[in-house]
Amino acid sequence: MLQPKLVKVEPLKSMKLRLVYETGEVKLFDVTPYAKGSWFGELKDADYFRTVHLLPDRSGIEWGNGQDIAPHELYECSVLTV
Image (cartoon, rainbow, N blue to C red):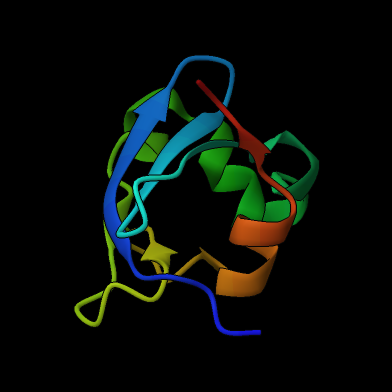
């Protein structure tokens, strides 16, 4: 299944991302389990975590040093919000 395109990504406290999809769905994704090791561990730095941005094709997200999370994981492992 193809995921809908992202419209917006917003970094929140507690290493969570608010994801807004073109379908109107708003989901919360917890990055905490991914923030391990030297490379993904950089995401524990709050200032760096806030630099998250959409990929140019809006299929996913990325941080400045290249860390990313697969689009299907973002969509399937996030929690729908009201």
